[in-house]
Length: 76
Image (cartoon, rainbow, N blue to C red; front, side, top):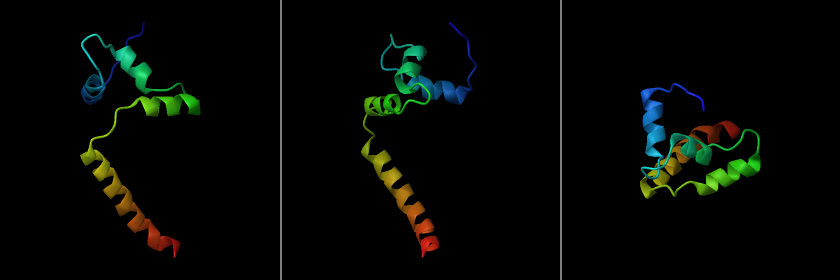
């Protein structure tokens, strides 16, 4: 058992990933953060994440499109 200090913002974000009252912060961290340096573990962790809401998907698509518009002329 170890004690760590996190900011209030980090605590709030971590707490939002708890799935039920019995879920612990250790369980959340182990579920979401793969072991360092293992692609297989990173892919498995990504597959276990919940689907993004449509609004968040749209926001990400818009951000990628805006970035592409800025970068594209540099490649000409």
